[in-house]
Amino acid sequence: MTAHTSLRGRHVLAVLASVAAIAAAVAAFTLSGGSPGRAFPALVPAAAPAGWPHLTLPDGTAVLSYPPSLRPVSGDADSVSAAQVSPKGVFRLYLNATPRQGDEQLRGWAAFRLRLLTADDAASAHELAAAQDVAFRGGTGSCVIDTYVTRIGAHHYQELACLVQGRTSASVIVAAAPAATWAQASPLLLRAVAAYQIR
Amino acid sequence: MSLTFIRSAAGAALLAVLAAGCGTAATAQHAATKPAAAAQPRHSAPAHAPVTTPTPPPATTAPAPATKAPASSANPIPQGNGGDQDPDNNGGPSDGDGNI
Image (cartoon, rainbow over all chains, first blue to last red; front, side):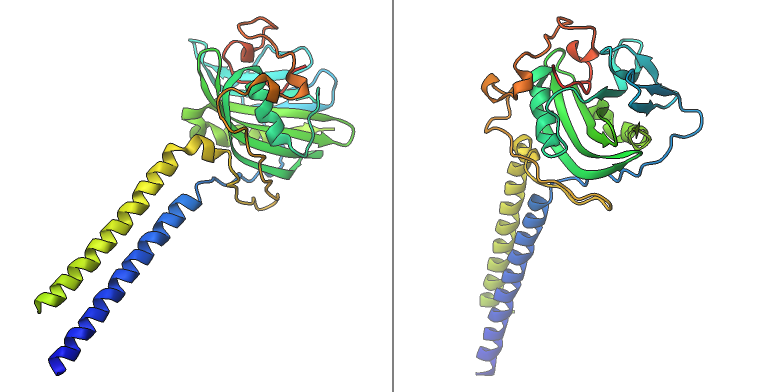
């Protein structure tokens, strides 16, 4: 009788152990599959470090500061851009500021940006993170971090694109780098975005 | 140790292995479908800014059909340097223009 009771107790223990193992496995799956996203990085508005050059939008409504390792590059007449380009013409770091031109709105900015990318020069684009009410120097903005592949060259970029609303104007700032090097490039790019000054 | 107990323990271990295997497989499948999943809401709030819920993309993540493009993209800037000298019309990073 005692032996029988002991045997039953071991059976119960075995069942409990299996239930615990299954619960642990399910929990591990839930956690791994349920939190694939990445946090939107903190953007704390701050003046650019000393020695960073500046580019003012032709209409005078915003100032783009960029690291000294970048150089101004050509673009639309009403925009300013700076980039670090390899000798072979590969963009390593890219910053651009452009006055608001179309239907951009703070609300729904992320979706707008992705639609614009795929409608214009990207074969595909995917949102990674987005935030609203992001503080900027002189305004607030909506931002999106996304990746896209260009139609020409199939280059894979990652970008932080923000629509920034100032007191009297709105503009878009874009910071991009090859997706493969985004992790290394993003601190510097985010620093430039945080230094963006709008009026 | 009794044979019955050994059987029970083996059964429990088998169940645990099967459960873990299912979790791994499902996770791998999730990773394989990441392009679609990447566009789903999966943000965590920054310390200072509330996070938006992204609008789900079209059913396909392939290049957006013209019918789903916004009004401002009805006349996209041609690629291959067709519209201007912008890098983004030549395979470079996209600028911040409104595509008008």
